[in-house]
Image (cartoon, rainbow, N blue to C red; front, top):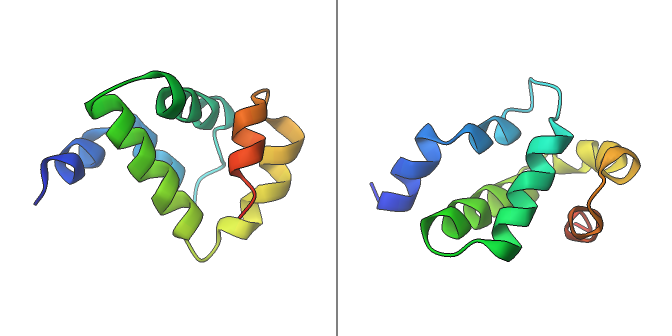
Length: 81
């Protein structure tokens, strides 16, 4: 298993990929911020979470919530699936 996948398995941001739970908008905003402002492993984990979220077949069900409640314009822009 690649190192990034191991980090993702233990990372709190993984809950964003659990579509049985309510979407944590603050966590999503933090992951997007990490994607744009962090470097190294934190940025790689953020990129992986966001890619997996975008590629999830049910991702479209979260768009309205993200657009309505996110406080981060970059999160809203990344939502454009």
